[in-house]
Image (tube, each protein chain N blue to C red):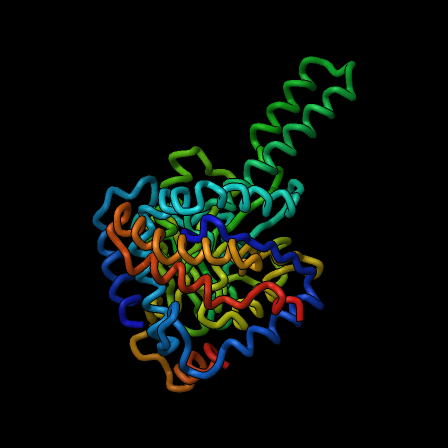
Length: 100
Length: 284
């Protein structure tokens, strides 16, 4: 869903430019209590919270979910890839992993 | 959800195993191929998701005003009943799906808070010969953990609805034990067996793949966890049914236009209620 991606990028720009109440990096930081529940919606595997970029990172799939205004955006279409070129078999995983 | 002032709401409470299987059977029947419905129109699944997203993007700001004027405030009663049926004890972990503006979450917090207060009062009453230090220590503990480890996570797919919810929370002073996640009910970003209760109030009929949402609910609930679904149902009484039709299709979209400047969104909301299967099907 293209809209999700464009919206997330636009929102990130807004967050970066905003006064961002008490958060580091881009806008408000993630609520720490959420970390005990959150996983990647695609693989259901654990995520690493990166405070400096305010993102939740799935190292295995090489994707990062943004945190905007303190709210983690866990929609797969909104995630950005952390690698320059994801390997072919990983792309296959994301395709089959969604709708079975 | 806005619409249907005269219509009844049904509360579906399911224990994890048998009830889920029954619902899944029903839901698979609904998920028929790539064609699905948007109100009374036939559209592709992708189109349906986009249209529904737009509906809630449009109504988010006025959502609470519309709910009150369309149901004459009755939706508040239904939501109160939901939380009373839930009867959460302190320490309960709740995930409220499609709960964008926070109605269920706030009620949950209020309920647990009052249980905690009552527990504290009873504790102090029982121990009449406590020293002043011991009494003030109890009050201090209460201040630090007003909810006693209870937590509610509000998950919604719509950014605007969550934004409104977060603003309301700030305005009303809710912060402890409350968090917000942008996520898809069909593909939840939560680990297995985490929550004691899963609620979805007036949200499930807006999910495109209900079977996936139910599978996800089953996954994230702990064994023995509860699934609580609040949704509009059908009116059996024929006279009431005609009045309800009149109100739904003649009054509500007009109200939508006057109050929110958006006829089409409210037309969708009314139609989606009619398309949703009646309560008897949920039991088979």
